Image (cartoon, rainbow over all chains, first blue to last red; front, top):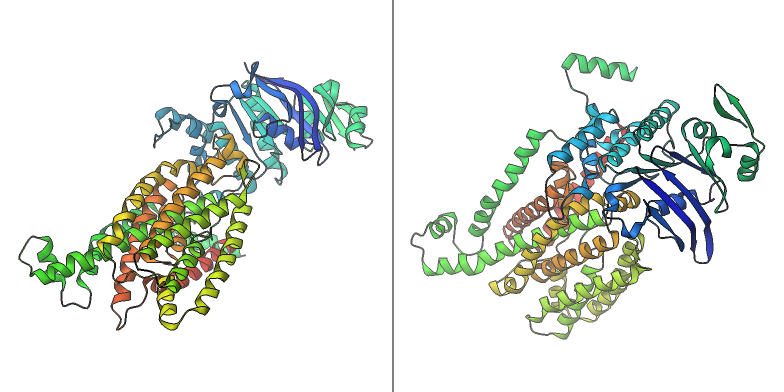
Length: 252
Length: 352
């Protein structure tokens, strides 16, 4: 059981406030979606949650301990950024193996049996077994995204963060990635993702945080947050929310 | 239509579709073995070439403890051997620092001379030639200039506990251009012989190296070669984007400072020995990646090995002409066409 808390996060750069008093929490089995307009602070919030940015004030904590006090935080938390490119030609297998880096002893040069098992599991889970010797730069967008998901999985953390995981993917590849993430949430991982498609959010996520201008419009369970009034406050658009086949749909 | 033709060809000739793999494993290991085997061969060849009438027979006699005349022994031991070792050390240092910097800067065009090292060393040496100081001070000045210029570049690019790659590269270009113009001013004011001396040094030369040239530079080079291997794993992570590599526990600022430090020491020592030998540091890591893939555990040692081998070979070629060419010109003459070939090849791959 893992629980992630953000307490009164503020982030500003050169006097310009990007996050304003954001407080939220998410725990094992939850999939938190973050939505909002461009520039509303979604990526900044995600990077703060990943520990990549230090908030100007407020704290991030995992299981009640501040990030700075968590042992081996890189073994417990991973982020998949929007940019999934690698500098040189690299095979999928080599890429996924990089995910074991936080688990390697400081000066060791080879992977242990456990490391290999985790890499195999990650390749298996993402369906990339047959692609292991392919170079990453020859993969299609969806395959590449899955390769980076496998990298995150090999890292073996209990918290996985994703910045627009379906960006630039065709419909089938989007559903593939989202279904994999749902399986991970069902396994008890904490999933946090920035997403743009409201219907995908309502279908896959269990919790939702809506951001506008760096502050939270609403945060909580999907049923309570995904309402016409909240969406109007967030996007400034009139969006009907209807229930169909036991799920919420947004009609824009 | 095109696709169907391709499929038919595959069926006809049982060609396996290219999966983006540059080279298969057995071909790779054969190439690696060839490179390793060529080292002793080139070393002996290099000892057998020169003005004095000392050929392969005498060299073999020397190594197998048979009788060699004292003059031949002098030629082999004190004239040709330091020169061959100088080529090996310089090539290895430039190859490894080039590979490290290309990884750290995420830029395939990076070379050991990108961060102001060449212009820093160059300006000091040209000034020293102009002042007509003793030859002993030339390598000292080169080392000093290289380290100061690289330090300056890192200082300029450091901002809010962060070093951005763009700033680092741009600072390198700016510092190089300032120092380059100072160097040009001093060159223009010098007389002919000094200009010739300066130009030879600036092109990179291994002529008349003695054991004294290697004493102070070989130890730091060897230490840095081993130190570079400790950063191979981290350099592999740096192939990913900033966010992913940091979330895997990589400290970018530490990596950039340490790689910068090691690469600077390697390059400064290489420059001390042989002047500005171009293209080894740029092209060798590319050749190695074509053969061994992108894993720095293999790229770093192989870049060192291939760098040494290539410079040894280039120096042998440089010496076989009627008058002696600076070795740096030979590497550039061979290196540039190869680089063009690489660019063409990449275009082919992209269009496929």
